[in-house]
Length: 315
Ligand SMILES: [Mn+2]
Image (cartoon, rainbow, N blue to C red; front, side):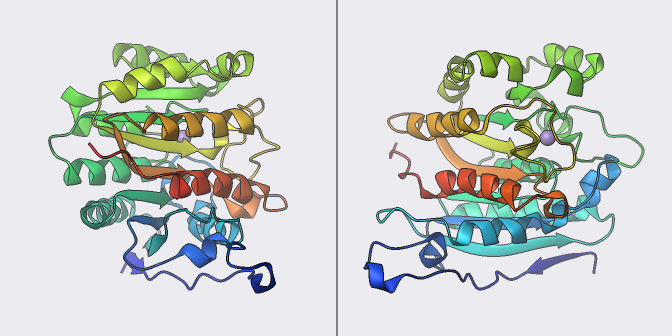
């Protein structure tokens, strides 16, 4: 079979019983049936079709390992691990369909799901799953990325460079997309023009370097006009030294502290807002290209924030 469901591994890590009950780490917060959950998409097919350097298939395992030993706030909610959807060879569409169905099922039981990619082809499955779970909802897409990923699918089909064009094709009347951190040299003029034609919101890496709050107004507006925010973090939005373990490292990139601050802004903006963050994903971690595990750790710090933040305000 070219697409398989792989059960969750056992989470293990350091324990410090001598330091008392507050000395807990994320691996000690994994509980079946928790309101939050993670699921992995072990897939190289999207990056391969996009002619990038492959390795994202090992992303979920590396991210779990990097998450395990991070400290957990004592009042943080527990989370479940739903295992992986594993794609062998070029079975991308079947893998995305399996992941989308798994996401839709999971959102019936969990208030927040974090998908661990995989390349950015993960996003098409993420959105399709979220849409399936909430057919009538207004969904705003916030992509933290050096790339618009708006290319049109070619003869081989979709790839890690096409997810947002595919999402628009799936849901043309309701496409509401904000890309934060794009690099001018990493996107052709054709894509920039397409973004304008499709009313895509844009905040560049240069703007964020000049002002770390440059995206706040656009993010607030996106949240105000939607019921759900779909947050997708491509770790290649950060600099090559912060995120070397990706398919396409950024020469410039947005500082890590700025990306953390944007994620925090999203999470704190959920308090008192109507908008929910039911689904987030973190993509393009490619452990074979990592150095000293720094990319995995960077991804894990962001994933920890999304998983451990306070619950959404009730509506
Ligand atoms: Mn991307």
